[in-house]
Length: 123
Image 1: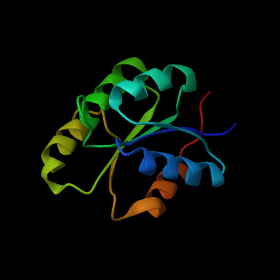
Image 2 (image 1 turned 90 degrees about the vertical axis):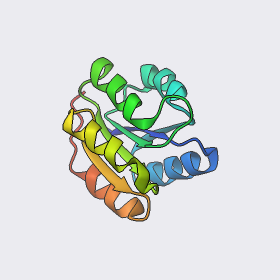
Image 3 (image 1 turned 180 degrees about the vertical axis):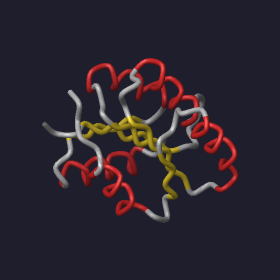
Image 4 (image 1 turned 45 degrees about the horizontal axis):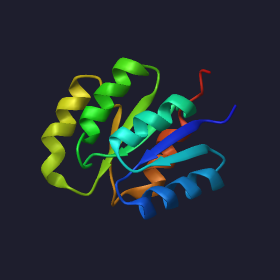
């Protein structure tokens, strides 16, 4: 079974490029461009993993992670960002159990692929 990954970034170019890279690595991936869009896509995709920019317009990545924990508790959540000012918000979300991993965008695809390779789809 293919691991289903939902990639969320407010920049469609980034989200679409990451999705294509993930698909090329053998994952079933879909892109979303806001937290609200991610929630809509998640209903259809039923992702095993959510990869989301921590900084999004409207509902941010930490709030989206909390939504996933409540509505799709088996989905692993990874927040990604360049922005060091959100560190406190991400740490709080991780302590609360809403976020499984934080990856700096500078660490990029390698760390994401390492995280994904450790996950076995349950459904």
